[in-house]
Length: 125
Image: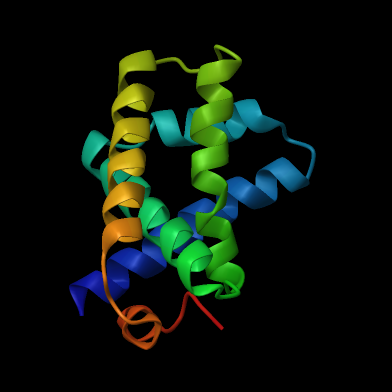
């Protein structure tokens, strides 16, 4: 039950970040939004995003709206680092490392695609 609440809160946060970018607020607001979050929150978000990107690629799933919002996290992290927009560079470097590690683990996981979809049915179509 707590995991579902955490996923819902994460999706809402990322949706907020993505919607502010599409509303013309700019990527700096998204980066500042993530910079204001705790390291644990950012690590959890990066782990979920890395896992989701790898499963989406490996199993050829289409993400739902909440899943697409999660796909924005690595883009924000990498753009923030590349364009030197991050207020706390080490925090974003740690999050990128967590994302890359989660991605690598998920790619190598030998799970069945139906099992992956059953783990998070709200993220994939």
